[in-house]
Image (tube, rainbow, N blue to C red; front, side, top):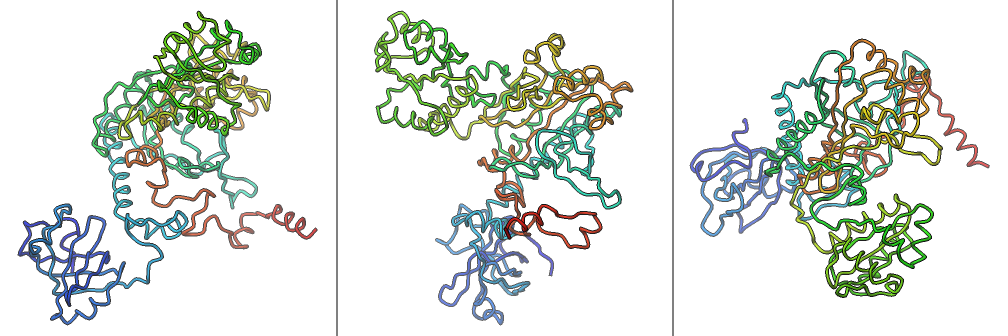
Amino acid sequence: MQRTNTCGELTAKEIGKKAFLCGWVDVRRDHGGVIFIDLRDRYGITQAVFNPDKKFFKEAEHLRREDCIGVSGKIRSRPEGMKNPKMRTGEIEVVADELFIYNRSEVPPLTVDDEHPANEDMRMRYRYLDLRRPSMQKKLAMRHEAAQAARAYLSSKNFLEIETPLLVRATPEGARDYVVPSRVHPGNFYALPQSPQLYKQILMCSGVDRYFQLPRCLRDEDLRMDRQPEHTQIDVEMSFPSLEDLWETGEGVIKAVFEKCANKKIKAPFRRIPHKEAAERYGTDKPDLRYGLLLSDVTEIINKSDFQVFKNITKDGGIVKAINPEKDLTRKEIEDYTSFVQQLGAKGLAWVKVNGKALESNIAKFFGKETQEELIKKIGAKDKSTIFFMAGSLKNVNQYLDKLRQKMAADFKLYDPDEFEFCWIINFPLFEWNEEEDKWDPAHHMFCMPFEEDMKYLETDPGKVCCTQFDLVLNGIELASGSLRINRPEVQERVMNVIGLDKKAAERKFGFLLEAFKYGAPPHGGFGMGFDRIVALMAGTNDIREVIAFPKNKAAQCLMDNSPSEIEPIQMKELHIKIEAEKAGKKEDKK
């Protein structure tokens, strides 16, 4: 027989009709000789009733969880007192007149329900069972709907979906490449793409004008909740765009996806915050705007005080910042927050309490009356507030106070977890100084177009060069990055020179892109959005593994198929590979 309905669609309107349902046994109950089965599929649950006068009743008595079965029968109303208004199918049940057992299940190693989730290793090992849970089915469906919403929006704006290669040339993009040996070209390797960056720029040189795809991006990097060896982007590139065009397109994608899948009205345009302002006020370029707790740079005021501990730090180029949770904190709370930042690596926190127009604490004596009033005004502190100070390098102070700000916001419940607050972070520096290697590195990547007015600093003062790079941030989480791209060979060459990439090396690594730029490459720009992160946040989690069908664990392993794994010797021979490192390791072990 063919399935007539799913397990999530029958209602009182179908009473009296016949139905044939298929699915898995969710629960079996024996009520005085009558067997009740909750039959589950992706769409929901329907109750099936097995009466003892049926010839298949004995088989029904031995059904157990996760048996895969089909049930044919008549739809009837549940008896009074047995209806479940919380379920779409809660008014009806199917009285079985046929039972089909497609496959019996062994005792499952984990319980397939949302009330008793297994530990992470069990979920990864038996992912096919974990995915049967209703919550996981909903997340997979949400992911599908989000992808369709993004595709529909971009297609409506004349973007073409074009696939770029998975076997590419290795190029430096910030993380290690996964490499694939070539059998027909011994000693040569493909790389798996960290992003389609170069290829989408080539597409703009090809006259495509507007491109998008949902590509797989692969990066060999250390994992955490929001990272996987392979992830999916919503990747977009446009010819002849302004920054406004890119931001408007990104906002359109977000609105389409969130309004379709999360039922949230998204207000646009999003707030735009210069990178420098974000770092000064929030301590990070990924600020959470759902709450205040802004940081105040009080270095100049502190320098007017007699507090030598801080003044010695500022003399060496350090800064002093303050954070005001606007709470009258207890001594225990103050000590807990001090301990928190010390665990992060900070030396500690100084603190004062506001008493009218004066400050009180063991360091208040180092601040004169005018200095105290100036501090209170600068910070905007109200009476009875507890103010924390931290001194050190700009990088460290911002890093530690950013974490402290997040903790205080969570502790004091300063935000609504269901609120979505987007912003664009703009005007990034093009370069950052690499102290270990004593050289300039790209802050994001080397293809971001510098602002025209800053190009004069490329050779003389690279730290002053800002560029068209931008990030999209939601609730303190980076969702997207993009920029206008460099399309002029002479500008690209100047940027590569700053980071120490000579012309010969540039030709070896990016020759095909630089060559394309010689033949009338148009101005172009675009962005890549973290699709997994978007879906995870809409689903109410920060863990992208929850919205990926078959993720890797924290050790970059798939416990279900045991990858990565060894390959057969014949494959090694065909690929001209010998594992010398392993042999060397075994020799060391023998010693």
